[in-house]
Length: 287
Length: 139
Image (cartoon, rainbow over all chains, first blue to last red; front, side, top):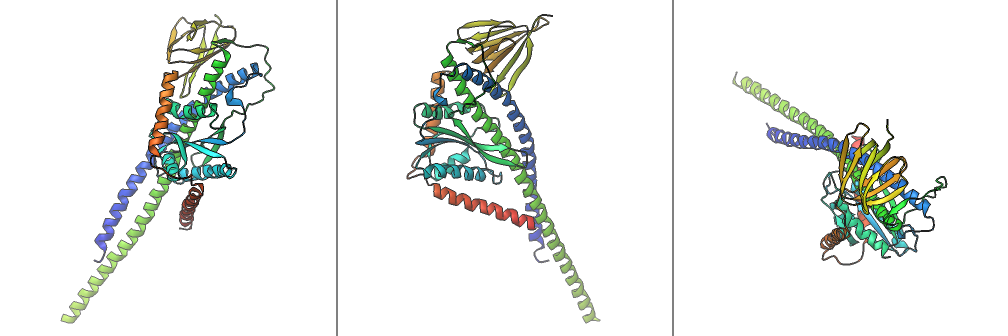
């Protein structure tokens, strides 16, 4: 029977691939839920912090922290968060497309760009295109810790305080729902002061040690927590994108298998028919 | 029933505690703080130590913080806890580490930032993805 064995081996191997993609889909689904939970858990910290900073800014309208001052833009910084691994559809490519579009906007005004890459994919991408990478963090795993980000974020914050960069952006994927992720560019620095006219203060805090130092550590932590949230959100996106990609891979494998099965059956029937006609022909020749 | 104060202990990674207490003790940078309800508004940095809560029924809860910021308003205490041990020199070391990794990653990299090249490649990649998607929909 011509090709019968080959087709069978091919079906077997596709079935094995299908098992793998199916497993990856399920793993991604469960990791996605956990990442979503973690994403939720970062919210209270950021909310509380925004409150405190709001109070502080209102209590000290005359004092402007360096992080809140708009300057002429000569150089900008981007913190770009991507996944470490691939097999997640167009997730990283869409993010890079958005980032590059933004960057071209700046480079057209001959503003220079520094990049802080978080995640293997970003490191490789910006390396290939000779971007000036000033800091990186990768291999952070599925449960990143804030500690992993302190270093890279500090590099960018220091660059801002020293006047090396005049704006800082955070790029990461936003988790809309498990089917949709959209790349999001967020301005971290200078912090756009939300002019809350409703908050009228007749009181002020007692500061220990003093208000400026407190504001300093608060703002630093605030930026860090935003980057951390971006990272966790990006992981949720990565997992859901991988889940979708692996689901479609599994479906495709199923389609191919059923096609091959049809071809195999046809080949089998053809060979049986041929055998019968040979026997019949042989028998009639003898009689 | 004695008066209580609302306490939130949160870190960047998770919410640690949210509830009420009759008295809160925290390791402020300038010394240990005891906070009773209707404390005057205060904001302080924390050093590593225990935040202790006394509950209505006399029991106590203790949470370790490795630092952070404490905000007090008359009826709310918020502890913005750090999960990592923070110190200027430690942070600095982490920053240097991150810089070094980037330098290693881009070792023997020459030339200008090739944004146009990046755009072209991305356009091709997304066209490919789009084509695959269309092909699938037709099937």
